[in-house]
Length: 397
Image (cartoon, helix red, strand yellow):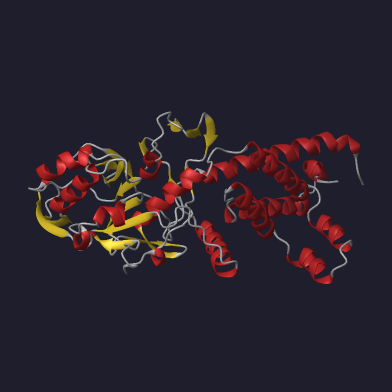
């Protein structure tokens, strides 16, 4: 029986709990590690997008050039880590590459150099000037024991580290240890500090934003080709084999994004299979360039409304609310689903699809569903075993 005197209290309970759920959702987004529920969701999403609907967007199609340096290694003495002799990328070859870039400044787009310049080499003097003079070059900064290594040369560096919970790579941080900018963020090259981190929160243009994001894997290993197409270079080739060709810049680098890295050995597991680390960095940059990470007020309002409705059914109309709705449904299999198979997890999957499709935001499935189920179980136990019914008055009709 509806009791109007209890309506204000019910509203307070539902609204307060909805706010709590919104806060929990945002806090889970701030967790830098990739969770298993995220991996499962994006595997299913990727299969639907790529295999069923055949959607495969390429934001800068035919505008990337990948230079593989995996075959261009030399051995040098490791004076810092005491590992004896270690392989590094041939500095003389890199010096030749950056010299070519300096001869054509403004005629290429961006160079992503996924090479750590931390171990000294006898050829460093030949590389230092060409590298530091080259424009629009962004370089990987290695990190050990939680601290960034000091690079040998001046330049624009960014962290490329990420963490997972024993699974595939999904999320990428904007900042490493809250202070060091990630390489994709540095590549944005925003003079007005579009993104910044202050205490516990991250901001985009002075609006609270998420500190991690989920890259769209626009380019994957299957998109790389090593064959030539007429007089034109394809997407991937080994730097040492083509650096001396007279048409190298015109047919490969000109007007393109240039990605330099070890495409043979530096691969990382993702929900779309293994992808080169250099491609992941570039995909993360493209995602940052095309997506808004600031928390949308529309998304917050929609989430608050949905969580308020969930809170009402959680506390005041658990099973019977679903049954009443199901009785009005004429289609039998939908009625059966509503009465027998509906769950918090299924409901959150539906909400998540809307959230990710329209706002690009993933909502944790497992943790929220577990929490809601636990709360409902506790309420039922209290109702059944507590003799003093006044104790649970706020949870009854």
